[in-house]
Length: 192
Image (cartoon, rainbow, N blue to C red; front, side, top):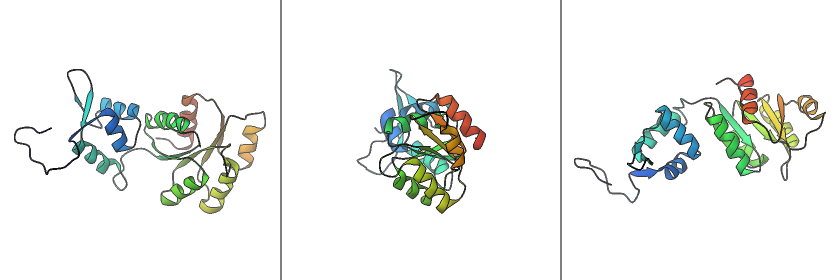
């Protein structure tokens, strides 16, 4: 799409992106970019039909302000769970509160993410294929020291919370959980 007086280098990339394209470009959920638009953090154009469109240049400028080295967003939280839908659910809940959220589908991916950039908080599922959450917690403690960790699991009994604390976790939540409960625990450990 070209406007009178506008100049740009020829490219195969579109200037204007739909909500879904913009969310993919930024690596966030559509609900997150909607919220950022409503807050004025990411400029959006609204079509006569009420659909949002985002200029690629505005998204690139947002990444420059909010990305590595220019981060203006909140503390980094790493969510580790093999369930992609649960990771997205947790990510969106935390992003809406102002956290910067990274995701990992398993222990090895999580340890690589921590080596790349240490988060201020890790949310870690207990039951994962391969290396489980308890083993991951132990490896984190051995390699990286005392990054706060909140464990969560669908297998909950009266000893779960005590076990988590004895092993070095700072909190424990049973699944399914209320997202606000998770946000409140995160805020207690790492305020936004």
